[in-house]
Image (cartoon, rainbow, N blue to C red; front, side, top):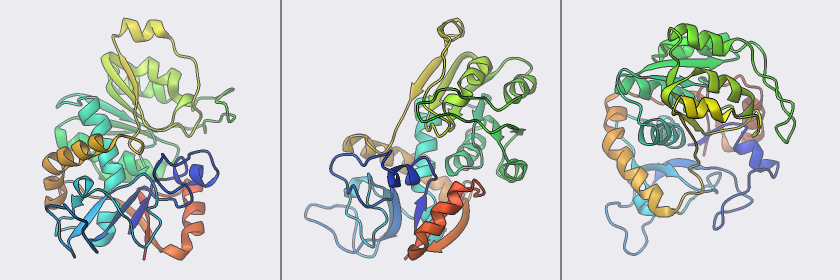
Length: 307
């Protein structure tokens, strides 16, 4: 199985708005996979045919076979079935890298997760609990907040108005009320880390709720890439704003991330302390149906394709 992250990535590439990095197939979608090793190239160490593996790629995941560097692979724990393994790589690597490695989320801190019902969102909530942090999540769907609560979300906030923007990110309208609810939930202090999976429409709210010394990391911009940034707020709160991508990173960075993830997070997945969230599994020839389902915003966690 392989995972579909959602409209910002998969359907964006399908529409020509998210081209593959150099060296990866331009006409085959897919950024992650799980399966078994079919063959090893010269110089490969640590892997053998029939080993169960999972990982990320820059493209080409919607294929029966993928070729990738052996040092970027992750071993599949015996406790995970094929579907579970297919739902791990992109979302858990992304959330771990953004929230823990880059933003340094620590015990006792609070993280705000936008689009908490997404694959990355469900992973981030669990990672927050895993490190001893509190989590606040936003969603436009009450049911998703309830389900995120079962994963350990401490406070769910309903964003009642859908954010909109044109293709240039102009004229965005922010979902109402969530920033005030975040401040209320934190007694006016704000949050230490913001995992932003929404983008421009939430920027002004994020500026209001970031705490002193807070860290705001942008991972996705489905609501648009632009809005106004008040640099005085950023300066006054000594806050950090950063963007991140995983797909186009140099090989050595991906190798280091795989190594850190194997050390820090994989044991918890093996023990069931963290778990992949699978919404549904569809056959590979139903990819159009899978994309339509993702675009409906009804999915919670991951949608998988299986061969």
